[in-house]
Amino acid sequence: MTEKKIRVLVAKPGLDGHDRGAKVIARALRDAGMEVIYTGLRQTPEMIAEAALQEDVDVVGLSVLSGAHMALTPRVMELLRANGQSHVKVFLGGIIPDEDLHRLMEMGVAGVYGPGASTEDIIRDIKTAVAA
Amino acid sequence: MTFSQAILNGDRLALARLLTKVENNSEEGRSALMELFPHTGKAHLIGVTGAPGTGKSSLVNQLALHYRKHEDKRVAIVAVDPSSPFTGGAVLGDRVRMRDLSGDPNVFIRSMASRGSLGGLAQATANVVQVFDAAGFDIIIVETVGAGQSEVDIARLAHTTLVVEAPGLGDDIQAIKAGILEIADILVVNKADRPGVENTEKALKTMLELAHPTERVFQHHGTYMGMSAPKKNPNAKMWIPPIQRTVSTEGNGIPELADAIAKHVEHLRSSGDWALRERTRLEVELEALIRNGLMNRFREDIPAERYEETLEAVVQRKVSPWEAATALLNGRSK
Ligand code: B12
Ligand SMILES: Nc1nc2c(ncn2[C@@H]2O[C@H](COP(=O)(O)OP(=O)(O)OP(=O)(O)O)[C@@H](O)[C@H]2O)c(=O)[nH]1
Ligand SMILES: [Mg+2]
Image 1 (cartoon, rainbow over the protein chains, first blue to last red):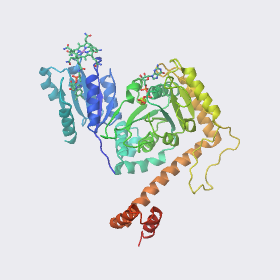
Image 2 (tube, rainbow over the protein chains, first blue to last red):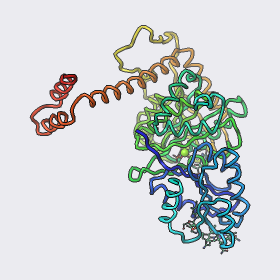
Image 3 (cartoon, helix red, strand yellow):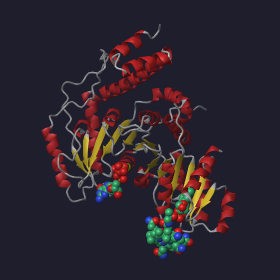
């Protein structure tokens, strides 16, 4: 019998220690039946891409509240591509100013979420993106 | 190139993807396993079990670092965490403690959800281990679910099983789970920087002294203990599980633990237990496959209505389960 689970890496790149959001998301995705690999704080883009490869995830979720998302996000995506994982969908959450949204979408980020975002929306968006 | 070729060539992405296919028990995964099987049987499998929070992941991190730095061995880690019985989802958090290992191409960490299996491992863990073995990892460390209901699974799979305890979890003999002596090849008292190490160690020692030393090979109650079965060396001394203190946050006691593990391997080799364990493990696997195969064949042969009727007769206490089973088995190929 083949059992297919959505596997998600939830990572905190950069130096900020705000991990509540990442943990809330990890738990919400678990409760939606996904397998969530949580990597903890202070991950470099290299560490994140390596973990994404070893864990063969469908989705990488980045949580950034430090303001460094415009540097960290493209770097992670570049490394994923270099590893042959361009099929992996990247989601971003945290403190993301509106003026960055357009460029993030252009980069190919699958979804961006700020404070108060509903976890139901996030779950739905991830399922849709993975099925696509 | 096929999966198995790519993996034998050291392709990490192919390895990661095959692990998923094997974990999902897909057709592709099974056929790759068949091709890879001749390349297995070389790795040393180390199991790490113990109550939640005793420091298993931190210990695995330090052990792997040790093997990388001092022995240049390639290390694979399989870390199993529980799936939620309600949603089937899981949060796999063991990697948090293994960040020191990132950036090393000779280390490969894979997290696995238990997916409803109760023995502290997932159903597919043994197969995942086989893939790593074929991929040429010298040491494969398997961390079990902390709250495994029966840790026998890991002892069956691993060559060397470490049972991790820590002070402050209630240090009397009762608190230390009964049965661990039967599976522990090495007892680790982690968090030795914490007050109460002496008590934990004393409790373990007392348990060891109370227990009569027993043979630690899992004899399989198979019918075919054939003549080709490897023989135990009759002169071999009994292995008494040593107690090792460690501080996994710092790395204290790790070289000594690695030493004890090496001694255990030596013991397994010289006593003949290594071959016996291998044989038992493969026999259990073979039997499980036969059992599944026979069950499937039986289900195909017996009309579903006939099965239902018989079951109903048992439920109504008209027929005993023994009679019912005999009747179904006899009527199988009617
Ligand atoms: C709680 C908090 C803290 C706590 C953090 C505790 C912890 N362990 O997380 C403490 C007190 C430690 C803290 C410290 C600091 N903080 Co603070 N903190 C906050 C605060 C008030 C709430 C953050 C929070 O936990 N929210 C609850 C969670 C559930 O929400 P969330 O993280 O936003 O997550 C949601 C979405 O963003 C999204 N999401 C998040 N991650 C992900 C990931 C994925 C994959 C997806 C799909 C979605 C997603 O979904 C979640 C659910 O809706 C915010 C202000 C705010 N309103 O956001 C400031 C805030 C983040 N902090 C800020 C600052 C500046 C700091 C400090 C630097 C302050 C200082 N000068 O010392 C320090 C730095 C600490 C450090 N080491 O990094 C600033 C950041 C400014 C910026 N980026 O431009 C903020 C925005 C406050 C402000 N308005 O200035 N902080
Ligand atoms: N003081 C001290 N703390 C330790 C030591 N080893 C681990 N810890 C801490 O104990 C906590 C749990 O460690 P883990 O390595 O995650 O334990 P675990 O047994 O893998 O936990 P589960 O996988 O959740 O069952 C962490 O906060 C570690 O930092 C140690 O030797 N001394
Ligand atoms: Mg752990």
